[in-house]
Length: 238
Image (cartoon, helix red, strand yellow):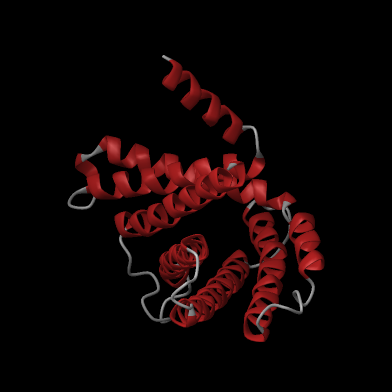
């Protein structure tokens, strides 16, 4: 009973925060798409449950889009705080981070216009704005992946240069950082696959993913995000 109470308390704590709630909604969204897409893969008409799960996924995705209407200021505050990055950080990492922040900052207003056009609030071609926002998201993911690769290369170099008498704690910390960056890289690449799929036809594999594959890629990314959040909170509590 105590374990169940702790689990419930932890879930409530997560849902009480905006970022925690978004991660839960995102995971459920892609999980429903994975399950629904799998059930309807062979014959969509034979699986009412599969269609219901896909409909649930679409509604959860729309919910996240509406909630992102309020993310611009938070992103702007983060971008201003980071600025050009700390001087002690690698120049390439700083440059990639700044460009990624810029892509993220531009992404939000483009998505807002696309949403408003779909809702009939403004007169605009929503498909063009969705394509632009998706391209910006993809650019951010690509820059994030390049940043993780750069950091991984630096961490491997540090580990190779570690003297034999280096403390195990120091090596363990470097390996933990490398693990985090490797998982971040995998998450970005999984999302990038979906971002390209949602671009206009003719761009690489755009429009070719079945729903279950979109759900699979998104579920991988979402679960990695949940794990990294939990691991970070656990490390901070130690």
